[in-house]
Structure formats: C-alpha cells, structure tokens
Length: 427
Image 1 (cartoon, rainbow, N blue to C red):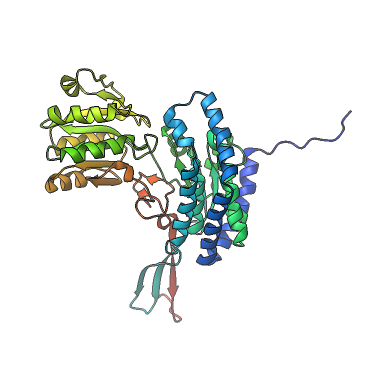
Image 2 (image 1 turned 45 degrees about the vertical axis):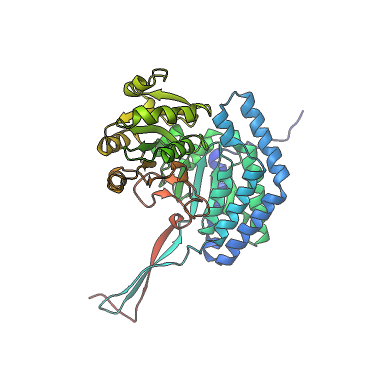
C-alpha cells in the first residue's frame, strides 16, 4: 500500500500567481536594464531560433498533425504552419526589433512652470503584459520580443492547437535572455492550454497590468466581457476594399487579388469587395475571374448576381463575417458616401482601402471610415506592424484608447512625470 501523499496538481490560479510574481520581479529588472542588454537578448534569441530550427519544425509538425486529424480548414492550417521561411522571418523580426530605437526614456514633453518647476513626461514600461492568442505560433516570438524591447515582462497563453510550437519558440527566446544576463521570467509561456488559465489571467487584477487578446471573435468577446484587467482590444478583421468608379482597372484587379488571397487567414485580409455600379458590369467579371482561378468563392448581393448570375447569393450575416478563408462578399455601391456607410456599418474598424485615381474621392473615403488603418491604392494586407516599420506587432488595436492600429514597441509603453524643483512649496 502506497502511503506517500500525492501532491495535488497546481491549479490555474496558483500557476498564474507563481508566474506573475516572477514576471513582476523580471519587469523591475528590465526597467533598470540597459537598452543594449535588451537588444542583445533579442539578437541572441534570433540566433537561437535559427540554431533550433529543427526542433521548432518538429514541434510544429506535432501541432499540424493534430490539426489535420481534427479536420481543420486549409486556412487554419496555413495560420498554424511553420516552414523554414517563416522561421527565418521570426528570427529576422527579432533582429529588426533590436535595431529599433529604445522606446524607454523618450522625452514626450518638457516644460517649466512660472514657479520654476521643470516637468518632463517620459516613456516607461507598462509592467506585466498578458497576451492571449490562438493558432499562429509566430505570435510567441513577435509578442515576446516587442514586450522585451519595451521593458515589459510578458505571460503568453497560446491556443491548444499551437502549444508545442509555442513551447519550442519560447525555448529559443529563453536562451536569448540567459545569454544576455536577463531574467528568463521576462518571457513566460503558460504551462497549459486549458481554458482555466485564460480565466485566471482575466481575473488577475494586481498580477497583470494589461491584457492583449489576439484571436477570433469568441476569444476577444470573452476577454472584453470577463476581464478585470485593462485590455487592449484586437477585434475581428472585417476588412473592405472599395473599387471606386475612377479606379485604374489593372491596379484594382491586382490589389483585390492580393488583398483577398495573399494570405486568407490573417486579420488584414479583405473580406468584402465594394465596387461602384458604374464600372461593375465591365470590371467585376474580371475581378471575379481572377479570384476564382485561385480557388476563391463568393457571396454576392442581388445587383452583383444580375451581372454574374452564377455567383452564390449573400445571406443576412455574410457582410458581417470575417471569413479567414478564400471566400469574398461582394456588394455594389453608388459612390463614396454609400461605400463609407457600408464600411462603418459592417466593418470592425480594422483596415479598409479605396482604389481610385480621384484624389478627392480618396480623401473623402479616408476621412469618412472609422478604421484604425485606411489605405489608398494599396492592399489591406499591409495592415502589419512589420510593414509599418515596427519590426513586428503584438496585434492591430481596434479600440480608441491608448493605442490604435499596429501595436509596436512605442505603444507598449506608458508615461510618468519627472518634476524637478529647487525647494518650491505650494501656497
């Protein structure tokens, strides 16, 4: 008979508490560390990713095999997959972030009051950040690196689908921290993919300073509903490309094809095509043929189906759907005002584009849409921190407070005031 008492398994709350305490200590060390030390950890981490590529690929194949066995869609598998090019892109991303200016200690404002007090507003780290994400394993590297560059500790909780990939990538990041003499607790990955750990993070007021959700509608909805921690929202990417009557046809075809199909599973993929009625009879068949040849299917309004009767009809929810797949909703509109109204009603304030040679029409669209990112004559797939020169991004913020659009290192800082006097007292 075994009389040795078995230790109870660690609860999600206990695990988070342990990790958050270590993260707070690490955040304090990072806030005092030099920018050179943080950059060294990123460069060493990039080298470790390259050196451990075989281990990362093997871990990713475990995740991919499970996803294939579960019958996941091709778009989902694309988000999950890591190949040599994507692993190299992760490593380069760390190096790009290391090469950015140090965001800490920046003087945001500097003034002297009539009483002689000198006041400076400077950029400082937020503290401990919790990132909750789903199937894209590269978020482990991007989020970890951005938080580190900005002097924050981070607790990462990826989805169960990418758990092995995330653990392997984290091992490389930890190696970089060790090589630079920084605490490994600066970047931590949840030990479990159980939903209970997400609940513990959302209830972690006093343990975590900011939650960043990066995933689908259900995840973000849960975070916004349950979180007792401040949240930087990354909502759905219900993105639009509007082809205006003055669009160059060749440009419109090329941009729409890229915006929809370059990668269908990213949040910047166009999900709805809006096209002016005046040019639709001539141009819409060409755009549809381009996309259909690459495997895209459609959900079309009655006017579009009158031009192309073979298109499937759009249902009541189709213009409010983030497809994340090779599916495109199509609607005809009667000019900029109608296009803007549609975007603001059905979009998610993420990324929307207009294709036109008419500058006034472009400016009206850019000013009218409520999007965090609005583009003229460019693909919505440029909604990416790396393409903005941020090195990477932790997500696309669609809220209106603190940060909007791609969230890079500057957006992962807050501020403090340094006030210097010479003995002043307040009357």
